[in-house]
Length: 594
Image (tube, rainbow, N blue to C red):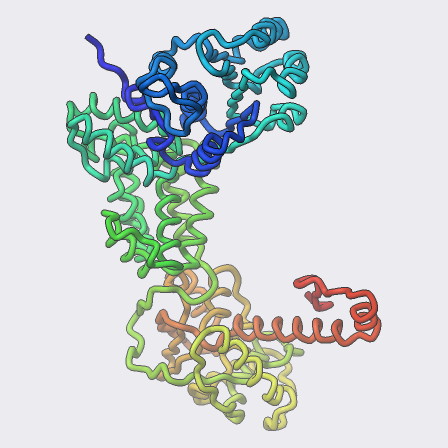
């Protein structure tokens, strides 16, 4: 004797057992209790969320006579009377389910409407349930409009569709519409736990969570997958068996990928990709799961209390939320989504997956990273209590190399005031802007009078013989004028001067991505060629308080504020605001040089 599948066996019989559609249950329950019944209902939503189930429960509520045969319309059908049992069994003569996909013509609709004029045979109401109603032809829709608007008192229409946009507005306006929600994975997993306990099947919470995610909001799909999992795992559902059945990626691989990304370990990323390929795992599914994991990490970073204490991945999520910066998480999420779409264009899925991982390594967000790691052998005992800023140099009028060398030689005579380090990045930008405004430009500073060099060679020679100016060098101004490109230029613009010991210069950068040998070597070569002697750079990762990029951002913010103030103070604008109540649209004002 064959068993009944879980999706049919555990179909809800009453509103109280319905899962995930509380808003619909509440409205229908109140309507039934107050006898405020509409003549046509439209249920919309994706597959397997309860459209047909609600239609059957509604039909039982309208026709239930109670266990003693004396009951009336109720929100809690008894389940034992003739109407309830026959509707559950699918043989109630006054409950007609029609599949619009196979009965979509005007002739089919005409036959249905001809029967609607007759009184119910055995029930209180005759209920017509038309599934996938959007499949009806235009003529069929037009034929039912009049009856749908003014049906006989004993007739109720229940329409269901997965695509309400295809239903004519003339039909929508005649129905009471309910949009059924896709069920969250947590609700699906909780319901599956109850079903399996009643069935006497052992299961692991991780397995149910995997099924809940794979169901994509459909309870029927989840129950079907559970039937498959019971057969696959021989009665005891384990997380490993479900992953193998679904072709899903072990969460351990995903966590290891993000740990390798946090450590900027390209070799580990590629090794993990090879291991996944050797096990025959689905790379599209891996990117989909990786995007989901990044979303969960982003939530933990912003709202830590949102993490469920019972989540088995909680410890790993908190670890990665601390190791990865919010900027890197957002960038990785975007890249993974785009990489998922580009996977079909790659030579093969393994190559496409590897390129996504390498792309994550190649690009780093601009700004301070969450991880506070130190790279190289720089002095780790430097005080973080203060940082120095210096005036920006004006545009060079001589050859770039000569101007740079001249700056390095003569800037020792200009000592900028020190600025107290601010508590956060936003106040730091404002402090840099204010300090910068108080500086005397380099072009007008009291520097030793000298004729412009005829060529860059003498200046380089002078720079080579001059003593190194020390930690007061205006590094942001020099960084803007260095002839470097790509990541090497980003390294120069995003870095902060930390000091020097002879020809060994120390810089601080906001991300470990800037510490790659290629960019570092290019910047060292340009500095060595400019100064005329070998220069070595030591890089550390930490919070950057003064850099060319921060100064540029402060300047842009100041120009934006000045532009907004100018517009707000304009007499014509003020008159329009006072006389007509006009308002300046936020974000609509831009500086002329923007």
